Length: 83
Image (cartoon, rainbow, N blue to C red):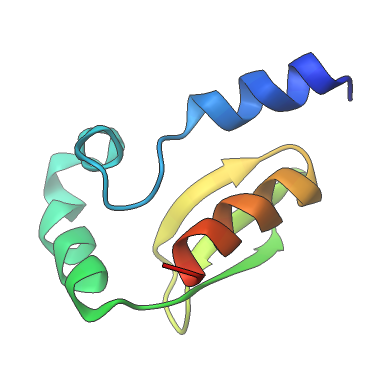
């Protein structure tokens, strides 16, 4: 993956807890998203079905983002976990 592809992938998913991130969450799951954010639940990176990596809130199946490259997923997760 080139640097521009990494940049474009990073730009597809807004940072967790931002208004743009909440807009990406299906309406039926937004209450759960608000609850997880309010709790400050950490996230982890796991392999995604079909390839790539998912960023999930710990001990849940709630997906905060999906990325093709593990390094991009790790950076996304670290940004939330270090807040």
